[in-house]
Length: 108
Length: 114
Image (cartoon, rainbow over all chains, first blue to last red; front, side, top):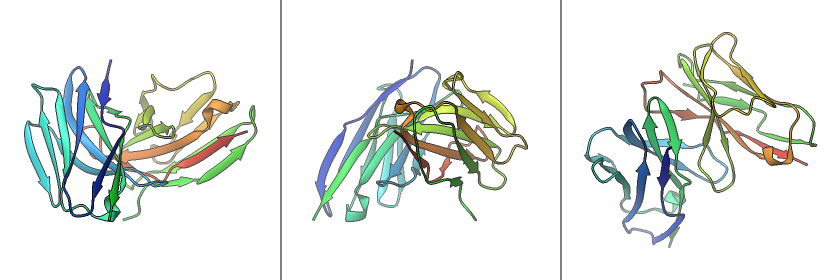
């Protein structure tokens, strides 16, 4: 089976750095994606890691370690608009399995 | 470029009634996905199309759910009859191809079954 686990909720202050972890159990695993979803909105793609290591896109970075079945999303210089749910998704044989999401609360 | 379009945005029906959702993917996107998202959960795949072919419908409850993508462009997802437990957000997403890791999601249809 496929499962991705992430914390249900994280709180951080504006300007800080926050890391959202994702551990997974998948077979034939290709890579790990991250999506952002604001309340009532559509999930939007943030990043994808096919290889081990860090991928950086502006204030957001994503990391993957296949040997540890682990990845994380790093958000720097947090802004109020970053308050949203963040989902990791495992890419497996052209299927996508989403974690249950981490709700990020950014406080002033 | 227009994004993924879904309609209706909201639907309230009584149990045992039929309901249909419509999705128009981004132009040129061959792969289309229907997901179900319950409150506080991640999207769960219902069905995936490659052009007009349903290549993965293993998670679709076929006793009451059906879907079609006749011309390989827009798609319809139907529930008949609806049950209370079907209340959720139904998301449509598309990608250039199955190999493309980026999926573009529509705003979803929020269904409430009373």
